[in-house]
View 1 (cartoon, rainbow, N blue to C red):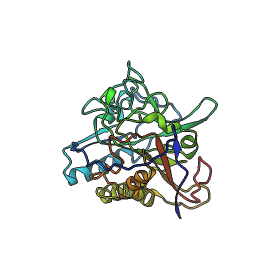
View 2: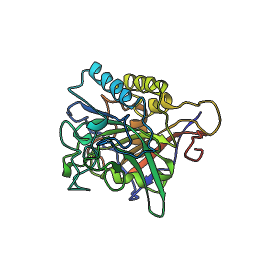
View 3: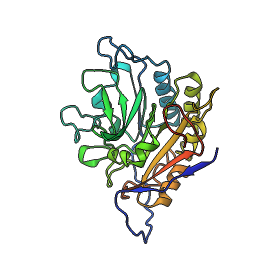
View 4: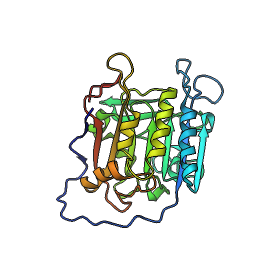
Length: 297
């Protein structure tokens, strides 16, 4: 399949006349991985009697974290099942009562890179445009949405996250992006530049765990978005059920979005610098990818 980008979305249109290249900041190398297999009606679980358990989300978190341990990152954290609380993904600025996503070592926003593997859904209607993610413990919120709860890389609330990877269904869904739904997860002067996920349904299998492991191991120096599309795309038997990985990159200059997608890596994730105004985004996808749970791209 051919890789495509679409016309960038922008909250503010501006004439860009200069490009200033900044040196990469001297950042710590911190990653946190969350995996949730257990859902339903047992004590402290999120979901309902009809929410199916997953089999490989914890394994997703394990192989992802192991790649960063092997690379020698200074802080590698893993949280599984009931250890994944809503507060870990909710920003204190959006929800002062439940938000604690910048708390080290538990929150997603204390790190530079974060992965969540869980159930996901999306809303695209008059009620709003957003993705929603299921947590593992009902002590706080069981769900974190891109509209109401998530805000990453925002210095005002102590955020530090630059790369978010959502291994869930409809986590980087084209329809949500088209109506600017993912702008809610970042601020224009914040650090978050890279949001990776799926358009339509994604799969829970050993094959996908292995693909995620390959992606993590191969993406420290480049291919941050490019490798995501290559590794996580697959076409099972049947029609209209392809797994469609997608990427949303926030930037000031579209050329930097493209550079981050292709040449950025976990160790070199500053093609879009922290100081850039991230008022624009680009959506990257595989042309013709046709998933369950979403229209053909």
